[in-house]
Structures are given as structure tokens and as C-alpha cells.
Length: 69
Picture 1: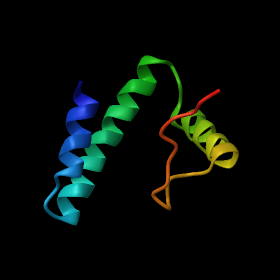
Picture 2: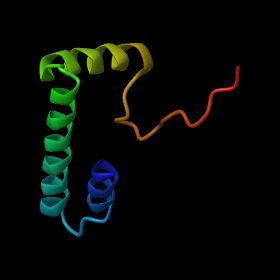
Picture 3: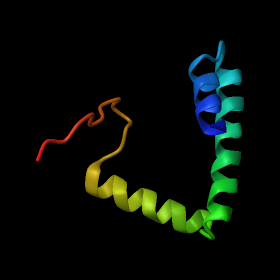
């Protein structure tokens, strides 16, 4: 999948400039995907902020790996 390829290129970027360029490619893929689902970028951003307020963000590098019910 192209998103995985771009994410891997982002992780392997040799410089901040290369990393930002890969992020731009990822963002382009996001824009393409939301068009396919007939969602605006504003709607996507609203969902992102709602999830962040409910679950927190990733700024501290901490994320949930598994949930056991």
C-alpha cells in the first residue's frame, strides 16, 4: 500500500528536509483518501481533535498497543 511505503520512507529519512517531504506525500495521500470517502479536510480535522480530546495525542511518544477486555 502506498501509505505504508510513504510512512517507511518517512521513518528512513536521512534529514529533517527529507522527512518533511515524506510528510507532504503522506498528506497528499490523506487528501486523496478523504475525497474517496466524500469527507472534507475540515471534517477529518474535527474527528482528529475529538479523538485527541477523548484519548490523548501522540506528542509524548506514548501509545496504546493492546486492549484486553
